[in-house]
Length: 258
Image (tube, rainbow, N blue to C red; front, top):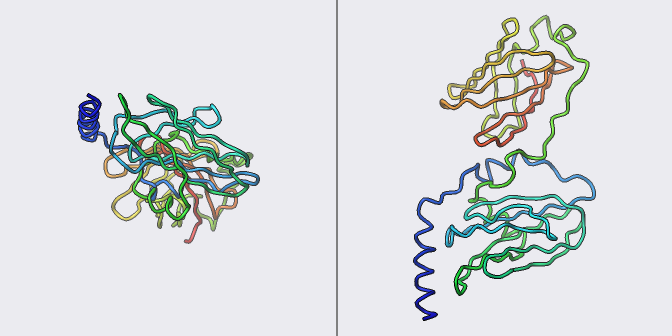
């Protein structure tokens, strides 16, 4: 009887692999938007490489606090103060993992799936950074749709007090160096309170100047992605954010080169 139950369970798990693709950017796409660790903090990546048992998606608890969900081919991360931590997932049983997080340390927790009596077990295990960083590359982000990056407001700046070589603030070429797939050279043209930018032939954004910000939408292969950029105080650099699919936030930073 127990063997029959396991066979049925395997069939259910196998069928759950079909059509359960994880949405969200891949790790290489998402990584540029992740902040550097702050002082007195460590980072823990949680990921699950296998699609076996994709229908099993237990909540992940850290010291009794829900921090995410274990999803097939997905990953998320948390930044925490140094200390002792216990990770727990629950299906028909609780599976736990305990470890110490040190200041400045990055740890990797991988979720595996094993056969249970009625349900499968999703269990956490600690892996080395070398193994973790290699395996997580094929996973997609499943955490909070907004990263912890905050774009500080540049107060006291208006379009009236910015002058760069007699040009409008947004006319010229800018090198965007931290926007993942949106990086490169952006050629911008300001006409009054409207700005248009063309990068090659694959990205165009149009925006309007509102106070000290440039707001608009990027036309990226037919998809319109909202962005907000702070008008540069020095006329030579800028920073802002762009919401990629699903609300993932990319941080925009760049410098005028022409």
